[in-house]
Image (cartoon, rainbow, N blue to C red; front, side, top):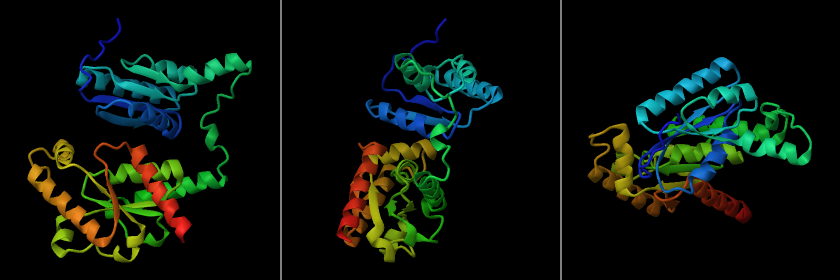
Length: 281
């Protein structure tokens, strides 16, 4: 018997990105599809599922989520090996299999078998584009949430904004998809009291791009992390957002609201700004 289909479209659904590689392809495709729906999704990436044991572990995690949520998880899969895909398809989820949906019909149409090579797009590890993306990912991870001030001169963009305004996912998306070295730094109450940007960032103001967010949405996001805390209180969220926007205007930092924008839309705006800066240099 098929598991029940969720009848509450307003509820949060869990989405799994399952891959025998990094999961970037599955996640990119999944994001493109999910942005067509105005609802919230909890996203889980399951990369490097390249053995039966790992496939069964993925099946278990998906089924546990189904049991906890009471509704089917959505699964975007780029598993190349049919035996691994068959295992994951036993799970109680709604499957979107990119290999079966696109590769197999193309095999029939073209009359040619695909290579079915895992991670084929990354076999040329000496390609300049691939190396740039890996370097950008490492850079963004090292400079996430203000962890480091080293080598900021190498940053293509430095994202600033209050905590939970979308800086980290945007930084990683820019790195993974476009090879953009993106650092991100939180603007916190201490910065507002001093009336200055975080220490060490002033000289890189020309590289900055700000993200803001509606106060009620920020409070909702923060309450998921620390329910009932001052950090998540609506009044505090309003204060931080107002102060952050005031600081960005005062410092001449370009910024946008992430409230109703997808990561793809935010990234596209930032890319336009970066290209505009390069043309003016």
